[in-house]
View 1 (cartoon, helix red, strand yellow):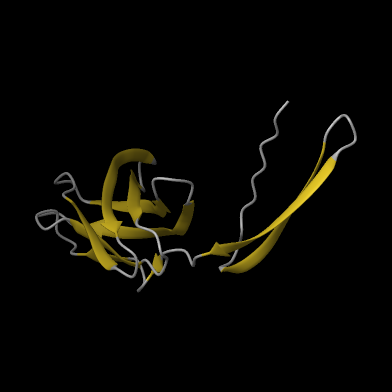
View 2: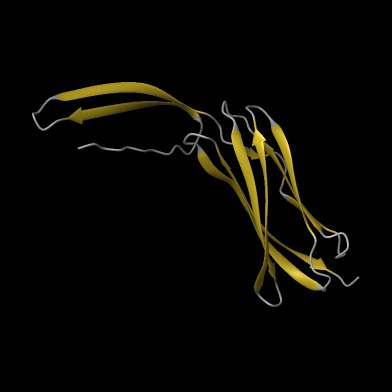
Length: 150
């Protein structure tokens, strides 16, 4: 009968991990290792949205992300947009970038709203993952912007 163990670290650093095992016959064993946890990617600057107040220009969302870790990660930005007045979901926008260790990337997503004056709300989630086991949320943001008539 096997056992699967998992642990998440809330900060970067070197940690000592000790595993003690015992079988049904009473045999025991202990092993100790040092685990190195790299710092997680982070927003280099604030998540920005630029209200152009014009449906012709639309809305630009920008996230500048830094990867200080020793592994390559994929950073994904998901933005859900809602019509604030009607209270309905309007669109989901997605953008992503592959960041090598030490790399900084700018992820910009443009949205062209319908030509109808409205106030919109958005919720943005910026997350990262790599091909093995590293995953996490970098940030979540919310905001409002107004689109005026043409």
